[in-house]
Amino acid sequence: MTKKNTKLAIFEEKEVRRTWHNDQWYFSISDIVQILTDSDNVKQYIKKMKTRDLELYVNWGTICTPLPIISKDGKRREENMAQLQGIFRIIQSIPSPKAEPFKQWLARVGQERIEEIQDPERAIVRAKQIYEQKGYNDDWIAKRMRGINIRNTLTDQWKERGAKEGFDFAILTNEIYKGTFEMDAKQIKAFKSLDNPDNPRDHMSELELILTMLGEATTTEITTSKNAKGLPELSKAAKEGGAVAGRTRKDIETKIGKSVLSKGNFKTGKIEKKVLKSKSNKK
Image (cartoon, rainbow, N blue to C red):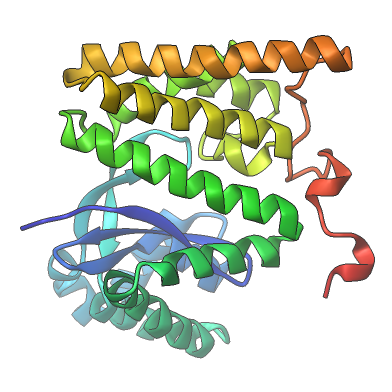
């Protein structure tokens, strides 16, 4: 049985795309080559690397497995991926001072999924550590972690009730966003000046996160209470859940006299100061 689950791993603050396939992690070859070489043209570097390493060239078709993953432009398409053994072979052909620490990092990351299956709480702990390393404060992280739990509960219901992971999930999520903020995911990203691969939630204020949680938690309750099944019924529940959060947002905006949704994003640092750790607390 093949199960796919895509996540990002972080090496020295650089992202490595990976996907869970045939009970093991497969990593993006282009991401790894980019990190180890800092090449301006990864495709050309890989081509030259195979030319100078005949054994690698001959076995390239065995090492690489084309798998669907989110590309740099935000679209889902097939890219060359490799599991640990293949990645270690590729690293042998790259003269880089980062090679050895990267191999040690890979070995740890490769073990993570097995540990997470045995103890799901480990995944939450690791996610929290990543946000801490990026500079978010403890209050924001606590809300983000709670939001992840609420989101997972909702998506589990969607899967059980006939929604397909990926396209269907995106449609349903957009219904909640539109009800909550009167913007879909693409519009929120544009409003906050984010790139396609960015997750809007990682750039939300605490209040924006709370409203998103309210929309998703309410959608879960509506979905289960009405026993919604299939995309049309699930979409209706998502609209209703988002509408509840949207009414709450409007009530808050009436009281505070301004919009809840801000243009700030974490990448530029132009986000609520209380979302970020103070400089004195940063290591």
